[in-house]
Length: 142
Image 1 (tube, rainbow, N blue to C red):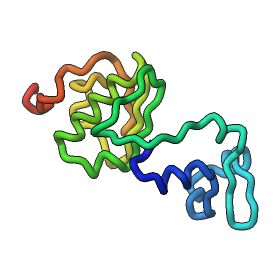
Image 2 (cartoon, rainbow, N blue to C red):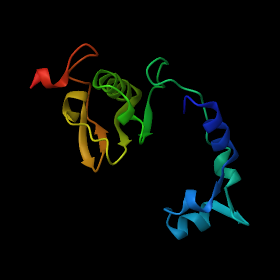
Image 3 (cartoon, rainbow, N blue to C red):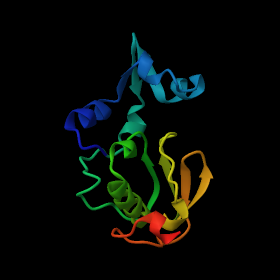
């Protein structure tokens, strides 16, 4: 999901320049992309299984029973209060045992209060419901 329609349209095309895929391991690049000149095209079979939607993280409802939420390099742009709202929404959206992957520079400081366990660098697993609600500040519960 994204709030920017231009970003969604680009993602739907599934065409990337070399500098956009340079961090992918060569075996994944070979398996899931077809190179045409300087462009790399994402595999059509997988692209058909992906749904791209416009979504405002602070306004729109979250889907339920998700296995994985990836929200990288987004949370840093929100206030602390908005971050709390996002983490609560992610918890409600995930099934029990589901995973949330944040950006490497976006760790959740009070992850247990949001119902998560830290299982890796900015990688969390839902272990239960949050211990606070949208009006609480995580630090106030320590």
